[in-house]
Length: 349
Image (cartoon, rainbow, N blue to C red; front, side, top):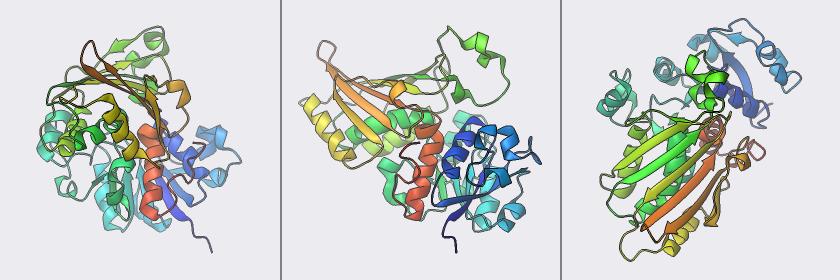
């Protein structure tokens, strides 16, 4: 008798959904029983993604329209929602009511405050009654809340790249109460798999541009988690940039250390926080992370430096926006929620 967890991927045709399929098809403790897509309903999975021919049970899977009763009938125990922001809420409540665990990759349940959601997303939160149930599932920092949780809200890609370096330092009260500045660069896949002129090859190739200034949506969850870590309001400015690569995020953070705090204290705190955490690789002082070393993996690489001339701490991170910033982190949360080793299905992914 199989002991695998039966899983469904809702919204399986996007970039994050594609990576999620890759990880789950090869996951020794997961069995995909349903994949949904309104656009591809009735189409064999391997017709849309030929790369999965002959892999696990991919040949037997066909896209179906997203229907709660059908997912329940398939025996789904965990549903991954790889949907655009603003759509996941349609499925979360009925799935939970059907006794199905929800791991959401969108922003719909990351915020605890419905008013904050409306301020950043431009419309009232459609299911505010669920916000108090959701666990903000950044595994390295909120792991104790993930085991057994029924509604897991996976962090965004940019927030992961900022929170992993910053939260331990704020928890330890190492940073001055002055504005933190962040600049990030992301590959074009971060915009999703959709037809859009600004993201066509000729629009992106040989070009770098900033966007989302001064109020990128991810600032809402970053601010929420930084305030929670510091026990005070943390002022932060964030400028994202689009760069002509497929996948990867490189983030640089500028902050001020409290008087008497040294770069050695920063290193000690980071190493103490992430000792034994398999997917956070601390590179050390004056070591600059490179996206080529993390794309295709669930690792986040972190380096740091102290600029004595400017009196600034510089934190640097690199991750794959589709994996550690989305699908890989979702699988990592799945592992923790079900009591599997954290690295299951992710060591090479």
